[in-house]
Image (cartoon, rainbow, N blue to C red):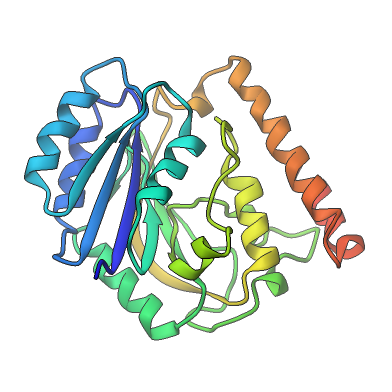
Length: 258
């Protein structure tokens, strides 16, 4: 049985994909699978992925017929995943060797729905550690209990899907898919739904994901119509939270994230 499915979307990142793929190879294990989703790249990314499919144990490549954006590419990977646990990586980021084995071990030890981890942000030559904004480590809690207070940074303000690991039961419950077509801020409605509806989570002090900030091809660097998806994403957070049983308590927090 596959223990871990790793979903990695790629779009026009031929410059960075080799680093990403080398780090996946350094994390390979016989019970891990790597689902590499090419979101219809127009540069040399597709060729890089086809070579990686032969080089990385457990790797499979899925090619979109048309570009759909990060959320859609992640959903494609989720639909193909067979692992007991699932996680994500973006196609221009990379990992420390052996990180996934440590992450799986933490998830199995804690036995909760999902585990969140710290990460390293890389901007040029500068590296900055970013931590889950929740002080307790290795303690299983209700995800709802860490949404508030409204006037402080909390776990829903740390939305990165790749900064954690998720049990398959969340996928079966419909909690891991992203809003199809969102090209920006796709993690925001996702992390809010996870914290409202999952039953248990924990934070751990693992550092293994290197998040490359400031990449020219990144959607967060492009000032075009896709940035309007920020509004769509935050509208979704407010709309869904307004239907929650604790809407009167949670909505002030949702409004502050807008």
